[in-house]
Amino acid sequence: MAFADFVHSPAIAGFLSEIFLVALGLQATFWFLLWALLPLHVWVSDRYGAKVAFCFSNFATVAFAHLVAILLTLPALLKMRRGKIQKSKSVKLVRVLRDLPLVGLNFAFSLAVGSAAAIFTCKEEVKIDIQAGLPDSQLLVAQAVFSILVSEAIFYHLHRAFHETKYLYAKIHKIHHTWPAPVAIMATYAHPLEHIFCNLATVFTGPVLCGAHPFVSLSYSLLFSVGAAVHHSGYWSDDLGIHDLHHELFNVNYGNAHILDYLYGTYRSQSLCRGVQLKEQTSDKAN
Image (cartoon, rainbow, N blue to C red; front, side, top):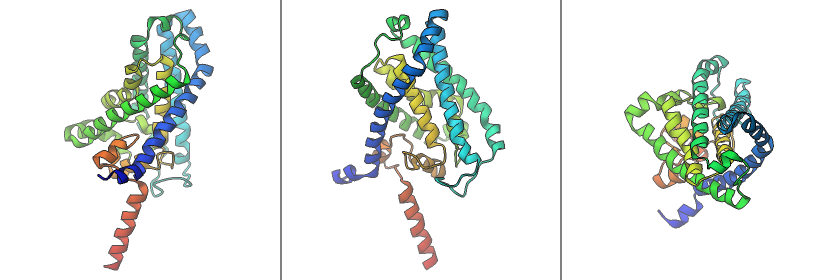
């Protein structure tokens, strides 16, 4: 691999922009939760204890992420074509309603895992005073970069293993891919084992390893969840349709930030694939 090709690859630009967006987004999400959630967390903690407060804050965060996902699903249900990636595909409300129970089950697992991570990894002084040890902006950026790198390493390899191991795909991951043209609320439509050991492990491992404050972990999980909903919405967004293409073509674009896709040769862009299709169609007509 030539260094020049590596530097000028669209995957590299996407990876760098992803790190920038995560660092910026984590700052914004963190300060939003401090404003909107911290006072309620303190109130619940004073009356019912730290464990209940952590469960409450995790419930509020997971619920808010799902509310955003529902709102992002509305354009697909309303058949809005502007900005849609797979314009020939449509979704019916009855299909969404049919698959919602599994989304609801994974909602419960998200709440359980997030609450447990906060309760069992949080420092005692933070349990007593949630405002103790709040990070400054520089530490937030460092934790954001570390967490996205850990997330990418975990998600890429586990996600690819789910595809390339026939048993894991047939028994577990195939459920998620029953949506070849996904919608936002189906970002967590997955086998519970996949949701716990791939999705949630991807989200919480980085913040836990770097000793992040519980509200940083909450912020990162909210940011990651909303990002997953956006990338499953079926409409153009910051990832330029890369994950939507994974659902369409199946064996490409396993990662989130896609640097490992480039290094392993599994990166494909929408423009590249459309160019290949156009070339094949032109060749067929010529023949």
